Length: 336
Ligand code: NAD
Ligand code: UDP
Image (tube, rainbow, N blue to C red):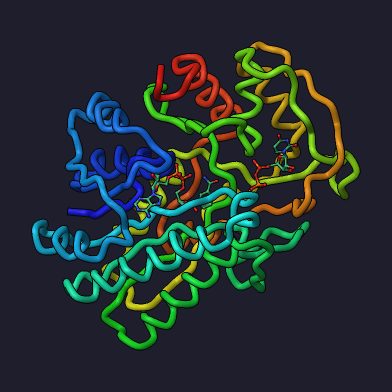
């Protein structure tokens, strides 16, 4: 069994589908602070299997000890965490408590139970600076906000644990920009309130929930002046976790691996692709840069290819098509 913390969330739910399709049995631990219970039924509709679900918090050590003693867990995929950059600047303690203290309590329980295989959700935000070259895993790291700092602290903690005890097997996955949804349109990203991220915002404009998009900055040093990112389909990201899981037994150290497509698209490129996919016009205004944003970054994804035998399959048109299908089928997210 694979314990999936945060498995009811956006990336976790897609990864549970991939795990089941690959013959693994996921068991989800999630406190539902940013997800809905009906994700379980949706996973069942897609795969024919309903994962075991435990509602609870990774900071609850007693609960974790029970979970590890009651279920035959071979490895943990650890998604549970808070992820809103702006909120992390306003409420840093919330982020250090949930993300850092939560992950500490998780690895302590794993150590106690002798479960020493972990795949961790990190982020390309740990690189913290712009680059016109593809970013390799050996680029220097820098935290630019408390959210990024929480990821860096955890990367360091996991690396130290592996160095001290070579029985640990860990893969740290640094995601670039996950977008898209499962092709069924049954699971997808369901942000609370006004979306911070580009794709959820664009799709809410397309469906008529918001008037227009604000494009943050038109004077970046990029091909059309708008910010460039490496968008990756969430199903590709999910299959990257299965690839990492299959790889775990062959290594005994802590390794960071980028998951991206290796291609960068600007905000205007994404708007064009989304207009094509949805056949809707996306009105937008170019406004001031958003504080803390950087010009351009995209992955060198060759390590994931050579080491995990993984590479992204979906392109930007697929990503926009699937985001739009999810938005149309679920105009109010999981609430209907
Ligand atoms: P999400 O919010 O959709 O999923 C996270 C899940 O974890 C939610 O279901 C939430 O209820 C749960 N959770 C949060 N704190 C918890 C706790 N203390 N105990 C138990 N459950 C808890 O987010 P996501 O987009 O699926 O992201 C998953 C992971 O990937 C996060 O760690 C995030 O930082 C990381 N990540 C996300 C992105 C992105 O753009 N979505 C990019 C890079 C890294
Ligand atoms: N962006 C934008 N308008 C929005 C949201 C995002 O122009 O309403 C831009 C943002 O400046 C960045 C890109 O879209 O260049 C991706 O932003 P997102 O927040 O999705 O991801 P980030 O790369 O910041 O994690």
